[in-house]
Structure formats: C-alpha cells, structure tokens
Image (cartoon, rainbow, N blue to C red):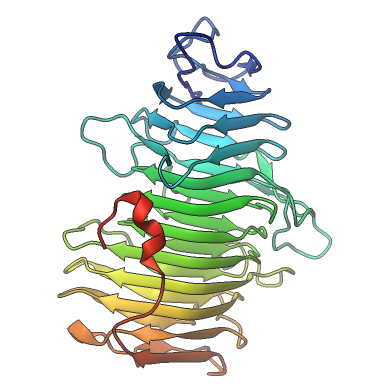
Amino acid sequence: MKKLVLSVFATTAILCASCSLDNDDQNTGGNTNNEVTAQNLAGNLTTDLRLSSGIAHNLIGALLVKDGATLTIDAGTRINALAGGTDVYIMVEKGGKIIADGTIDSPIIFTSNATNPQPGDWGGIILNGKAPLSRQSGSESNSASEVNTSILYGGNIADDTSGILDYVKIEYSGARIDDEAEHNGLTLNGVGSGTVISNIAILNGDDDAIEFFGGTVNATNILVINAKDDMFDFTQGYTGTCTNLYGVRENGFTAVTSDPRGIEADGNLDGNTPTDSNQSVFTIDKVTIINNAANVDLSDGIKIRRGATATITNAFIRLGADATFADVVDLKDSKGDATDTTSILGVADTANGLDIADVKNTTSGNATITLSAGTTGGADTSVFAWTGYSF
C-alpha cells in the first residue's frame, strides 16, 4: 500500500519540525530515501504535523495518522491528491486526530491533481474513532476498516474525539476497491460526539458521499453534489444527529450504480447481524434530496431498513424533468424492515410526476410517514454560500 506525500516546504522554514514518519512494512509512495522534502512526506504520521496555506501540498499515497499524532491543516490550505485511486487517501486511526478548521472565507480543499479530474481519482478522508458500534451480545465493539482491514475502529467512548472538520471541501474522491469495499468522500468509522463535523461540501464522488459506520458523532451543514452512489449513508449502530443536509444529482449527471439513494440507513452492518444490540437510532432535521438527472434512476429518496430507527423532520424531496425515484420512501428490505418507531415528516414537490403516495411502510405498517405536497422546505441553502455552488 502506498503512502501519502504532502508538501511541507516553506521559504523560511520546514513546517514539519515536530513530525516523524515510520515507513516500516509500507510502500513509501515514491520516497525511496525515506526523507522529508518539499514534495515527499511518506510513511505513518507518528507525531504532530501542521500544514499551512499558500504552499503546495501533494497527497501521493496513503497517510495514516497514528494514535497520539495530530494533523493540523490551516484555513485556506489546498491539498492536491494524486489521481491514484484506492492507494491515495488520508486515514486517522483511533487515538489520532485531524484538525482541519477552515473558515467561510478560507475553506480547506481536498481535490484531485488531475488535469481532467474524475470521480474516484483518490480515496477520500477516513476517521476511525472509539465510539460504540452495533455488535453481538458479549462481543467487543470493534470492527475492521473497509479500506485497511488491519486497522480497527469502535469502542465504548461515546464522546471520543477524532478532531475537527469545518469548512472543508472534498472533491473527486470515493475510489472503489471492489464490489464489496470502496472509499467514500468522508468515512466516519466509530467516530465519537467529541468530533466536530460541520460545513462540509462533497462534490463529484464515485461512491457514497458521506457514510457513518456506527459512532455518535453529530454532523451539521453537509452539501453533497453528484454522488455516484448514496448521498447520506448510515449503518452499524449510528446514534447521532444530523442537521441541514442537502443532496442533489444535477441535470446532465449520467453515472449509474445498482442502487443509489438519497438516504440509506441500516441498523447493523449490511443487515448481516440482525440480533445486534445498539442498532442505528438517529435523527435528521432539515434534509433536501433532489434528483435532477434526467433518465438516471435514483433508487429511493429515503431508504431506512435492517433494524434502523430514523426520526426525520423537515425533509424535502424533488424530481427534475425526466428524472425518477424507484420509491420516494421505502422502509422494507429482505434482510429486515425499519423499526415501527421510525418517523418521517416532510414535503415532496409533485411536479414532474413525483407521487407522494409512492412509499413503502414497514410490513406492519406502523411506522409514520407523513409527506405533504409543496415546493419549499428542507435544508437551508444559505449556509452553503462559502462553497460557491449555485442552487
């Protein structure tokens, strides 16, 4: 597996005086001398490193932020990721931290270095925390990362912190490993409520935009543009609250996957352990799901299943011309329905053939799905002005 290389050169000083690298048993991403240079920072990050704006930082492999280390990224910093697919990503391990604290005027940008960037050019950002997951009775609350199975996440520290991601833009990420494993734009593995996830824009990703694997972290103001698969994905016992989510497939978007959704939620991991304790029980307030991609189906606007319990309020769902949902809301699945305490309240725009009655309740029919016809509602788009996106 390749390593990350970040530029840490300044005209006045080397900025990583307090960082160290451990390259044992890992590919150095082209840094054969194991030395830090302006364009070569390879290996495991084992002590603190700060990246400043105004300097070219190049990600050319996998950076593993190890237990006890902190990667700090100043507001306005841009990190250009080599278009190397699954080998290029940033992973924060349990006990490590990332402090990417941008501002409205100086967001932090992670993007592809390709001349003609494409979805899946690089892997994205992965945080591994110590917060609880769904699990079998008596088993440990640990799980292997989908991207690197030697790295575990989960635990029993609900308020664990993996750092801060605020005013951050992630572009052209989500490289696919195989049919069963893939990167997302932002992957949150067992991340605790002490972590700040806010003001995030995820654009043109190859798989899910943001996925929560268990954990208790809350997320606020998340913008998703043209995710090839799910916009917002929850699984493995996630128990947090998400506020102000906006996801859209634009007109002209043509990518096709087997079952893309606006929201997808499982109680346990892939529905394979339905007797798990700590199934997903989460809340979303203010969410917009729009499919403007003509002749490209979005399987479901909202899909809750496999023992998950969702409380969703202030939802808004819309179709563009010639766009479709297989179902507006679907709470059924062959591996188990959503729970009957699931509640969805929102508005659907009936233009372009959207049918607010196109819903599937649980087998018992006792979950609450309340959709009314209308043209407004959902997320507040004004908070995304910093991204430059035109709504």
